[in-house]
Image 1 (cartoon, one colour):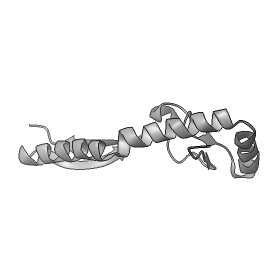
Image 2 (cartoon, one colour):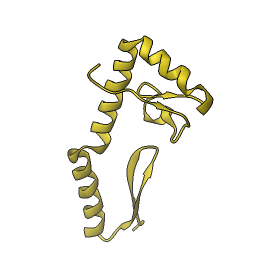
Image 3 (tube, one colour):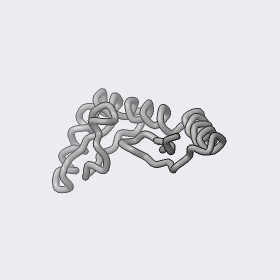
Length: 99
């Protein structure tokens, strides 16, 4: 298998807002070995999950994505509207003051 699929024992973030659970298997901690065995027995599914996770990380956390986030932050600072930045459902959001 080229990519690496993984399981998340707890829903750390709302996966539906990240495009569904196509990039991970979410299960209770006591079911993690069952999830692992399911992926081992279906390498095509495991690869699809790994590929989807890789796409998600590239879209949200690549150098290009960070450059866009920094540009948005600096733009808000330059026009003096910057009121903070935070992560919301896997997306970086710049908060701006109202004029």
